[in-house]
Image (cartoon, rainbow, N blue to C red; front, side, top):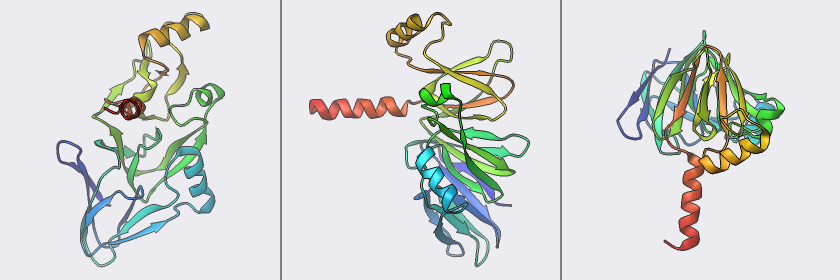
Length: 233
């Protein structure tokens, strides 16, 4: 099976080693360099309907890259479009749900499908809106996030609260809800608290499992850039 390894310190690469006949697939534009023994092609993975659903509901590319070790063993380097960390997850006993833009690359034994969320998650959906991505199958999956990535264990007694904009991926067995505050008070009080604390929406995870978080807020960064463009600084 292909070997996945994260290499580099700041904005690292994903290094994939393949034996002849092996293949991986990646987000469109992710391949940086590869040996001449490998073949790169674009494909609508999962067929027309799945590719269209992935594009319209999760914001991912309609076409993805397929890298195949056609002419012998070879190595390839991949990199996410946004600056930030890369993490390799082992799917099989554990499956994951992914936020928009989290997918980087995976073994072909892993399928990524779209899944509908509940009405609460959909209405407040920084984690995919009405739809999120979910993995099935077994093998290696590489994800990326804006800034550094870190896996935290959910507190089984009290649950764990994560700012909505920093969630990258989580184990699919976890329960979660998106709320306007961490206080558990009335609706108006929750909204006021969210506005004054600057935290906005938060995810409350419950159960046993891990959540992968990013140190940076992509939406906040985009807002900051937009404010500079407006003021001309």
